[in-house]
Length: 358
Image (tube, rainbow, N blue to C red; front, side, top):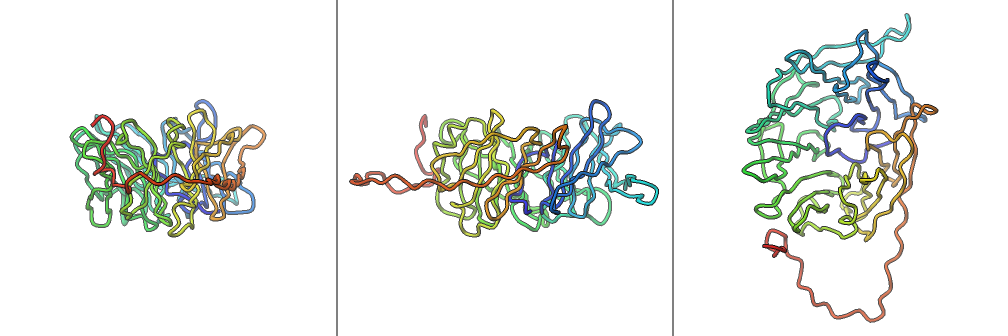
């Protein structure tokens, strides 16, 4: 399987490695929680528990690496501590190995959380956000322990990888009362604007697919907060389809990979407010609604380049399962015998276009 999107939101309870090889979650019940690694690259998924002598706290975060280890983020006293967990001890029975990586000081008013899995696979990053400045730390895959790699003025949220190398990261930055997505070059520690639909609109990036250049955004530039889509590097305006507006607070969580230079054909999976799944292509004028499988984990999924969506789930009967959904074939467009003469002007970029209420 191939992970079809570079994830765009905060790390969920279930997290999938950038190449789709492994996943991780906190498993167990009540106070008896432990990290669990899923192997997804084989013919059938299987889970390996990674318990330690002391149960994990419910607010711990886990993130799978492509080498099979699982990064865990814990709040320990006045520190945010990071460690790598891995299965070991085959001769004496299954055991869990733990490699301590160090930590970041916990300070009042600073939220520290894992960023989505890095496309480079072996690295891991966290975002420490406070009111006036946010810092990206590399906590795994570097030459030593946790190291700051970029400081961004303003309070940042979100987190979407823009390339396959794990160098360009998009963050939603709140500054001077508005929120705009910015691109952070982690190699140079440089910040540049990414979304600027209007001067005073809130423009957030939810998902990016580096193969096709497809971007899924949420913006209030049309007058209300709506889902829209655009193409990285394109001069065409961001579009806000009516079929997406009718979904309410839906969130895209995966995009079909391998659609190079064809963003209109790129399948997008959305988590709908009622818990169902929406499947959509930019070329479509409607969203296919499908029921989510029982025990669906974390609003996550994997696309194959052929257009099959793989959804992880866990139930008492099947503690580690994957169900597949095919991207439906779009119906042909309706035939118009006598189309009216076009009267609308050519598309204008939204930062130049009049908006309702302005």
